[in-house]
Image 1 (cartoon, rainbow, N blue to C red):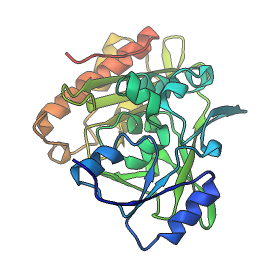
Image 2 (cartoon, rainbow, N blue to C red):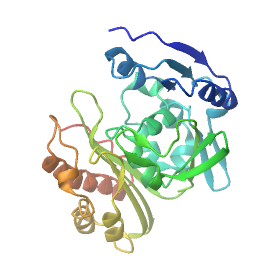
Image 3 (cartoon, helix red, strand yellow):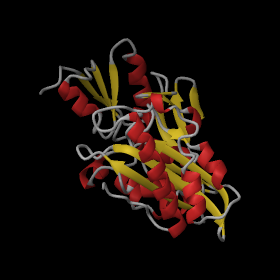
Length: 296
């Protein structure tokens, strides 16, 4: 199908993008990043913007930098660039392992981290990793910049803390140098999106877990932190028994009746998958390698 007619503008700077958002605030306006979510929606009629603002070429929103204890990733940085960045592998291992499992080569060569997080598809891979990595999302609007912790960013299906006149410009990740990060997911056989995905970031001292951060996506209508799993791991030994016990708490803070329920998996089945893939992510962390779990 062909999309409805729309006006198309390109922004070469954050300021120009914000000016365009302000100028067309009365119209149905969409921002174009990588386009993997928006363009299919436009072709099928699910989205029909009057104005399309292309921000994919804003240089200030691209690239990976490390400044002291903070890793900064521009919102328009593509997955492939993140996956190939040594700084991300070193300082944000959970995010690095997650990005390597997004889509396929073509998607990773075009899709952007900011587009993924701002779109907030509950089946997208990055929300869980953003929570596990304790990222801060930096938005810019008419009143300047503001920072939003990942725990406060995701509201619901396709809903975030971003205001209509704001732009997600970068993601800041506290350095987890020395920690182990993994991501395990059960991909949809039809789309590759996560039916359930679990990201884990563990800071260990020998066999003892000093701290743990665990996030999940594909389960609820937005990314969620698995605090009961974190609490079960912290201060304990990292072995098969403790991992199994911690994974058993994956659904403690979640209402099964409110979990995603669709043709691919019922909410009860997702609850079971959540426990299984939590255990797989933690086991991979114990083994010190990537989870990279393929569909069974």
